[in-house]
Length: 126
Image (cartoon, rainbow, N blue to C red; front, side, top):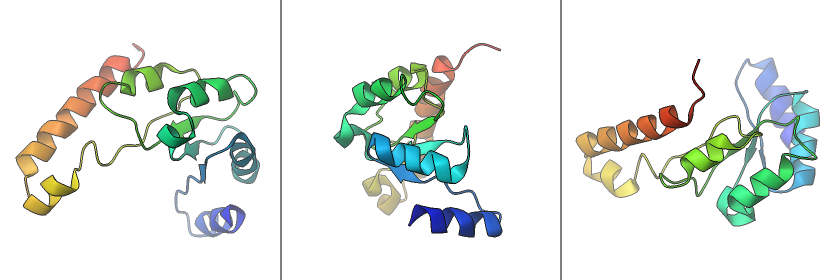
């Protein structure tokens, strides 16, 4: 259960961001974490993607969200521009299994640089 994992993580000073796939799960995770703590939406692409994330912004605007799964180069800026998105989670986009198994570190580095530019361009100016 998320509550037990959150308690364990706090006790051991470990960052834990619970995942949620429904509005109710987002609320439950937020209540367990405390106000204004981020909740991971997983799998974002399966539960409705950006439309789902934006729909949560009204009633659950107090919960910062971290959509993961399905966040690709072509939509990352759209996700990051949503009012309720705190961050995005990616893995296969930066670390494709085939590139990891091949030890293709130059390609992984290039992908990470492309992601960095995409994220930085979506960030608000200081």
